[in-house]
Amino acid sequence: MSALANIRNWLDERFGWDELMAFVRHKTVPTHRFSYFYFLGGMTLFLFGTQVVTGILLLLYYRPTPDGAFESVQYIMTKVPFGWLIRSIHSWGANVMILTAIAHMFSVFFLKSYRKPRELTWLSGMILLFLVLGFGFSGYLLPWNMLSLFATKVGTNMTAQAPFIGHWILVFLRGGDDVTGATLTRFFAIHVAILPGLATLLIGLHLLLVQRFGMSVPPSVEADWKAHPERARELRFFPNFFLRELMAWYVVLAVLGCLSAFKPWELGQKADLFGSAPAGIRPEWYFMFMFQTLRFLPAKIGPLAGDLIGVLLFGAAAAVWTCLPFFDNDKRGRGKRWITGVGVFALAYFIGMTAYAYLAK
Amino acid sequence: MQNPSLQENAKPERRHFLELFLGSGIFASLVAFIYPVLRYIIPPQQTELGSDLVVAAHVGDLKPNSGKIFPFGSRPAILILTSDGKYHALSAVCTHLGCTVQYLPDVHEVWCPCHNGKYSVDGANISGPPPRPLDEFDVILKDNNIYVQRTQNS
Image (cartoon, rainbow over all chains, first blue to last red; front, side, top):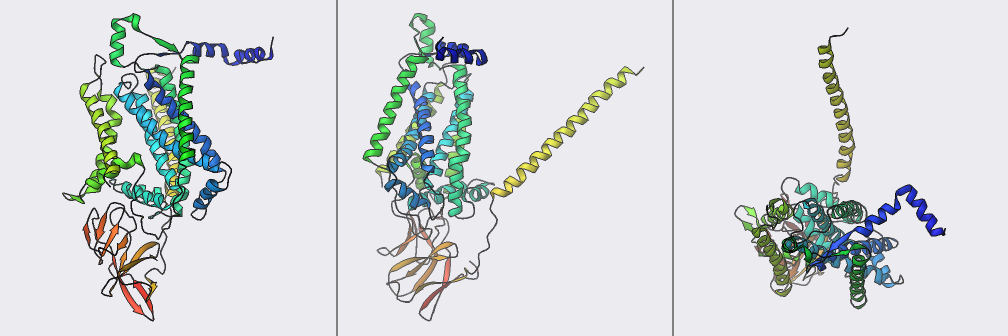
């Protein structure tokens, strides 16, 4: 018996290895004209992996203090061999991950994959998306430059608009009444300890649920397959689907490599707590639709501040969006029309406002 | 021999008591864990000392029709010398979402680039989203120094 077979037998006796492998062999993925959308979740997962790896590498040199943060990132970018690559992949990867996560969300939404019994998968995915935005917001401050300083001032100030607990959240996030070095240490802790811990737990749950229910088939395809069972097609997960997913990961890696090589992430100017906000300041693209909306709102709407209304509306919209699967309990399993309408509106609003913000300076 | 009905009655009561005991014990320990954590994450209030009067600049530092940011305690403030030679000292923290404002010499206004809020040189909010005027401070010229002092009501 070869050494490998020996190890296998040893594992099989203890953990039922063969049983586990049989399960992997039997796992399948349905194939139809929307199958490409199945790659998006895996791509987001892969990007999370690259963020963890590059993030750990950055930790070897990064210093989370107001006197050291900017200088340490500068050191990584200019002195450490391949430091520019690691840091650029981390920054670009964050943006691409948010893009694939948003694309994953909308594809799940329009293919109605959240229908019973997958409501909790959707819910865990939405919480993960909020965590990912939290990663983006907290990581943005860490290089401690002018743009990130003011983005953090504005962003944390907006949370203060929340009724009752607003000020408490503000002080919790900032580590005081103002954005200072205390905020930097906090955001660092949130970015490298709290969020990764929560995200890892939720990704585990999310994958477990996806595994438990299998891949969802869109209603139109499902109806077609029910009427013509001979048309149903599926692919073995391992190795057929897995190898295709691997190709998607290579494409993602190639995109990240190109972006980092041809457009290394900027460092900007060191944050100065007593400097004026630079002209042309704006948030990252994924917050632009909110930024643009707030710019449209007048200072006062009735007795209330325009920003308060804006923040409350976005909070309510996010809550409704997260709970939509629970309203889509169509008996025929096709999903309700108005819910698709809401999705189209949300996507159009997101793209439209973002585009407007960039085009109309 | 015991009365069976008495025994049956006594048991759930005792169980209920034990459950209550255990439940309140666990609840009390949770409170004992969570309360210090909640208190820990809110930092202690820092008292600001000696920030009611600062030297913002020296006479001659500013050209007419220009502004300068200076630290006033832990927050930035702005000193403006207008074209007609008058000094204004304002809080530089935008009343909208807290960005640091700057002076625009070409339009003689104070401007916040974050959301395009505008103030006049005496701090009044004139356009954009700012809900309140900027706090204005007293300016005292003495021995070539420009002192800025928190006004009694600000």
